[in-house]
Image 1: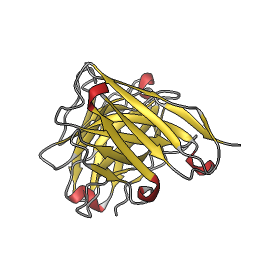
Image 2: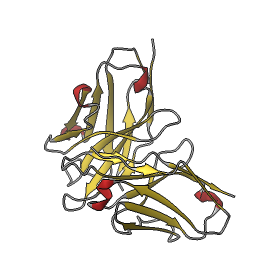
Image 3: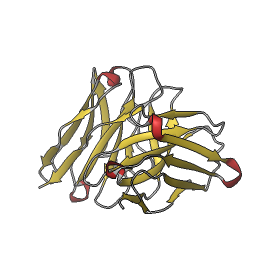
Length: 109
Length: 122
């Protein structure tokens, strides 16, 4: 099996840059994908693969990876970016299983 | 664009079976994607339950495998979840989502259904 670890909470001043991280052994083999979830709403995909953004996602969102750590960076955070962020990856065991990180609550000050 | 919509009972008795269906519109369930169930207990994080391909192949979360069955109905363009022997710990918002895999490598979920709250209580 595999686990993905995220910081429970992160804060950023309006207009500043913030990085949200996700750590796990499976990230040495697979890229992470990132999701934004606002209260009462379903998660929305914001980054997938090496650094791909779905249509409609602002270019202030970007992704990167190094070793066992994947990062989601928001450059110039906006008030509407306040949300929970989750990473996911394939399980590194070789089985077709999927794991999610515990989520990071982003507060925009 | 593809849209997903969950449906099913919002209340299930303990020891009973939770049954949900996800209707796929705007695209074919027979496309080269996997179709997934993901849940989120109130105030907690996301948990992957499992997935199905249109051929009927499935993969399940090892922690739930003994209680989960996911099936597909290509004629209705929908797929379903059954979770047996439920307890209060299975109370959660249940989402269906389309999973895409890049050359059997990394994956992502998009789009998601709106989610449906299932409460396990007598």
